[in-house]
Amino acid sequence: MFKHNFFVKILKKMDQFINSLFKIKLNKLNSLLKIKLNKLNSLLKIKLNKLNSLLKIKLNKQNFIFKKKKLAAFTSYNRTLLFLLGVIFFILSYLSIPYFYNSNKLIDDVENQLSKNLNINFNLSENFSYSFFPRPYFEFEDVSFLNQVENLGKMKVYISISKLLSPSKIKIDDAILNKVNFNVNKENYNFFTELLKNDFSNFTFEIKNSNIFYHNIKNDVLFINKIKRLKYYYDTKKLSNVLIADNEIFNIPYSIKFKNDFVKKKISSVINSDLLTIKFENDLNYKNFEKEGLVKFFYNKKKSRAVYNFSKDFFKFNFSDKSLDPNFIYKGTINLKPFFSESSGHIKEINSNELLNPNSFLVQFLKTEILNSKNLNMNTSINAKKITSFKDLINLVLKVKISEGLIDINKTTFSWLDKIDFKISDSLLHVKNNNLVLDALITIKISDYNELYKFFQTPRNYRKEIKKIEFNLSYNFDQFTANLNGIKVDELINQKVNKTLNQFILKDNKLQNRIYFKNLMNQAFKFYAG
Image (cartoon, rainbow, N blue to C red; front, side, top):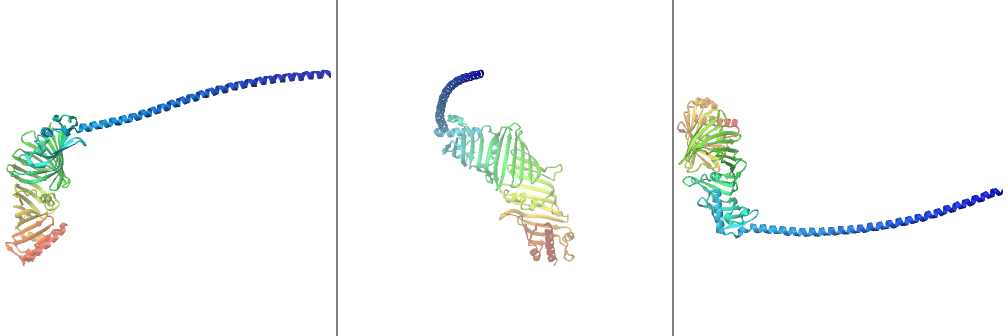
């Protein structure tokens, strides 16, 4: 028992001793941990303080740099603006230098430059202005040339910027004539084509809103050509001088383009009128004294061509359609001193619409009265075997004469089935109230009157012998009307026949025309037979 208690006590003391040791260890461990934590906290605080101070220093530096750049940018903007203003001021001052030129010296220099570039002596007025927008130029109020004071107009002369500081070495880049009247006659008829021989590689020449008056040898005006815009320039690709123009003649607008090839000595040209549906293409070879050329003519999808040659005193041509077996051939000669034309042509079949239709080119051309010049003298004839739309009409010989401003078709003849011959005399083509009118005396000789009655299906009791019919005709091409008067049948006048055939109006329909004309003629035959 005692032993047992003894061991129990020993065990308790040992337990107490171990607990005390464990407490001591725990206390030491806690103190060590507290020391470690305190050191760690202090180290963290030091690190955070250093990091904050570094961040503050960085932010301050960045703010300073940003403010510095902003200040530098502001300073640079002002500097650039001042520089630009200085450049603009310098440019304007430089472009304004011609204001201080000597006027007389300037005019002489400009005239010399124009003469050098165009081979034309210009007379420029002292009344001029200067402007440097959109580029430097002088504008002269009055200008004349070709030794004619009536050519007065305006001229703009554009000058090279690089030569502004040296008035004596002034260089013209471009020249523009405006509202000028050109008087073209036998002395200067080739004025516009001669300009193509000049050097336009560094210079352009334009003409705007001007007129060309074409004169004959007596200095009478033949016609006037209006220039809307005309320009000469150099084509660097084709090594040729080029002329382009938009013109108007007799209220008909047309455009032209000429090209002068200096290497081949050849002038190519194109003339086009959309209103008349006409286009000309021409190639002229001027190597020799006698010039030769080829013209291609396009009209309403039809093609034809003409070869020609000319010299100072004459012009010859041969005109035909473009085919192996040409439908027509037309040739002639024009003498230039004095002016006179003689020509003739042969055609297999002529279209009656080209002669009678009011919208045809021929009718519209005659209405322009371009041929009604007192100084124009022409004789021409056209032979046609057949006439379209009138299959029974054959062997047309159309003769046209122009003399002293009058146009007639005297001695024109045609036949009907070799049985009846028609002849036109005492004729005159003229314009009345803007309508084209033909006045003429028509003579009809009948070799077989029975064929005439058969054609009109005239009743047998009205078929009286007829050998000759004669009457005065007034035909209006625009209104499709014909007035007949003074009708003689075998030299006798029958009033009832005259009253019946006094006027008839052609219809649009061919069948209607046949029936209408047949009934009208049978009515006249009835009155003639009595």
